[in-house]
Image 1 (cartoon, rainbow, N blue to C red):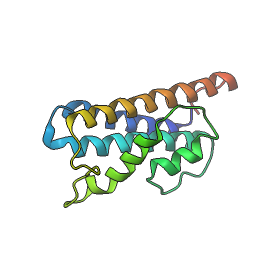
Image 2: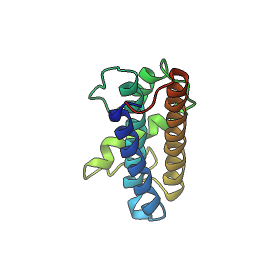
Image 3: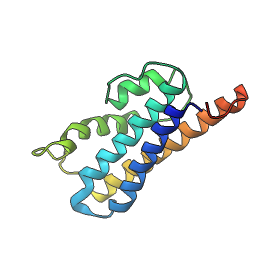
Image 4: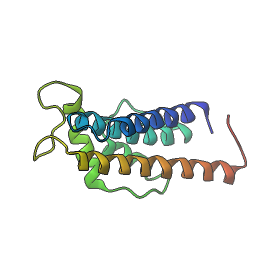
Length: 140
C-alpha cells in the first residue's frame, strides 16, 4: 500500500477512536457526527490515493463516493452519506452545531454514524488489501 494511502486510513482510525471515547456523551453528538464524516471522507481519499487519482480538496462524502465506487466495490447507504454531509459544516462552526433536519443528533444517531463509518473503514481496508494481494505487492 502506498504510504499516503496508509496515512489516510490511519487518520480515519483516529476519528473512529475519538468517536468511541465520546459516543455516549449527549452534548458531544455533533462532534461524534463530525468525526464519522471525517472518517468516511479519509477512507475515500485513501482509495483515490492508492489508485493514483488526484485527491481533491472535496469534503462531500457523496461526491467522493461517486469517485471511488468506480475503483472499489463497497456498500454504503446514500442517506447516511447525505446526513453526514449535512452535518459536516454545521458541526465545525457555532450556531447550527451540526443539526439534522429534526435538530441535534441523538446518541442513537451518533452510534449509527459510528457504525456506518466503521463499516466503510473496514470495507475500504479490505478492498485495498485485496488489491495488494492481487497485484502481489506490499507497502510502497
